[in-house]
Image 1: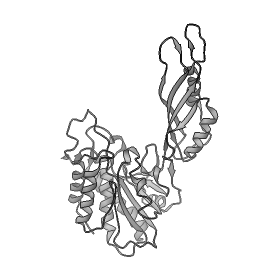
Image 2: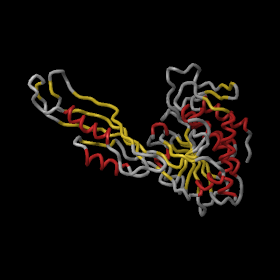
Image 3: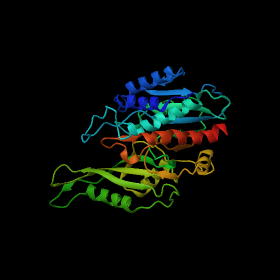
Image 4: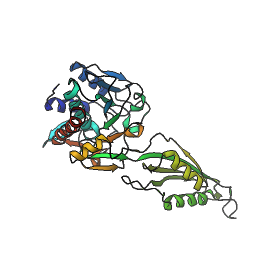
Length: 353
């Protein structure tokens, strides 16, 4: 099933024109659902997640997931144009979500349609447009992975300049509390919880994990917030601080958390350990295909829905990650063209050769 590039750009423009903040993606979910129905493709929906299977889907075959998201962050005050009015100037399409990740989404949809009614594919295809990616929400991709069927591996669309991310850092946010004993500041009595917290923060600043990932480098830890004290003349008995941990494929989040608990005097609690690091083996068919097509591979420092997928995935898509969440966001139309072409080449080599 072929669809013109003009119609793909119109779909992206339509998505841009509809506010789709995380948890508020009803309008773009409706638009995507209608789009598939207009192509006479059976479409499925759960919450604001939309997916479709190739016409000759065979449960006995392995399945490849094609996934990107249609939610966006909220625009900042420094936008100089209307973020919801798609405008094309000098072959650039401006608008919120154009780069992150609308271009990836429509490029994957275009390629899915090209393979949709092809018989005797080696793999099934499922196209999933997911919600709540920007907040890793519970009603996003995580809520449908158990519904859509078993997945063998997947391609997650995010702006990478069509390079292939073969590993991605995970995330933990830790709430820490150092507990001391209150006293009078003039007498220096008590046990200052700020000083206790400072000892742990200094450990965080200096500690190097023994395992360093080949693709993602070292685990990164940073204290990012701190709160203590009630008045100037009272030694504080409690000091709270927050630590941002960017984990690699050398450790699970649970392993990093335990190492921190073993070395810190403060109480350490993870808000969640669900956003795990991910990686794919160098001998996987996706990576081998990238090598064959001279697609550059790398390790990504930014988080995506990969963190919630228990099967092998890579992350790649048109656009530039540096444009994400920035004012006057845009995508070059040639980047969309390139995205469609490279996605097609990758899948051609896997499901047709």
